[in-house]
Image 1 (cartoon, rainbow, N blue to C red):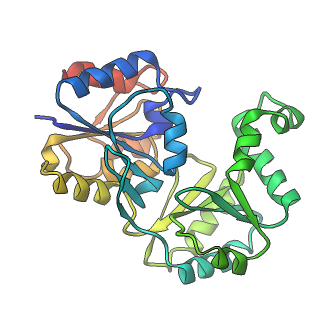
Image 2 (image 1 turned 90 degrees about the horizontal axis):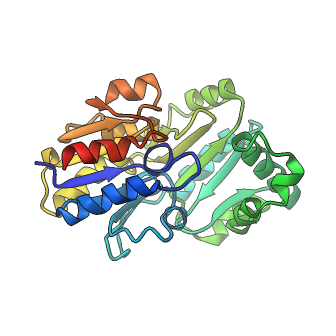
Length: 285
C-alpha cells in the first residue's frame, strides 16, 4: 500500500508555465486527505521550491538541492550535506578552463564568480535558452531577470567565495554547448566524492555524492517509519534517476522524460503537460 508520494518539481509536478495545474493540485489534496504523505524532491533550493509552491497550500516535506537539504512539514531543517570547500576549489580549477556559467548554489543565494557585466550576460543567455521567443532586451526588462539577479551574489574570485563562509550545496553549470558539458563531466570523473547529474540537456549539477535524491529519500522515509515499498516517486530527468532506479514501491517516469530515464523507472505516465502526476494519483486513489 502506498503511504508516501515523492515528486520532482520541474518537468514533473509543474507544467511548462512553472505552475502546478489546478487538476494536479486537487489530486495532491485528495491524496493528502486520504492520509498519504507528500514530499517534494527537487534540484531547486528551498527558496526556489517555495516560489514554485506559493499559494498552493500544500502540506509536505522538502528534499531540496537534489538531496543536500531536507526539511520537514514544518519547514525546519532535518539534515544537510554541504560540499567541502577545498573540493569546490579543485572542481572550480577544472571548470574555469571552460567558457561555462558556474553557479555555486547555497540554501539561500546563488554565488557566481566574475564581474557584474559578465554575470548579467550569462544570466541573459541562460534565460534566453528558456524563452527563445523573447528578445534580449525584453528578457533584461522582465521581472524574472530582476528576480534572478536579485538572488545572485557576485564575487570577484574564489577566495571571496571562501570568505563568504556559506554552505555550498551544489555547483550548477549551464551551457548550450552540450559536447562541452560532456567533456566537463568526463574530466570530473576522477572526483570520487561527487555526483554529477542534470535536470535538462544544457546543464550539469554537481553535489556531494551523499546528496542524491534516491538515497536521501530512502533514509528520510525510513526515519519516519515508512518502508520503501510504501513509497511512490515521480521524476523526469537524470537527477531523478537515483530515485527511479531504487526499489521503491512504484517509480514513475513522466511521458516527457528522455528514453534512458524512462528505462530506469518501473512505470511511465503521461507528460507533465498532460497532467501525468494527477493521472497516476487518480488511479492510485
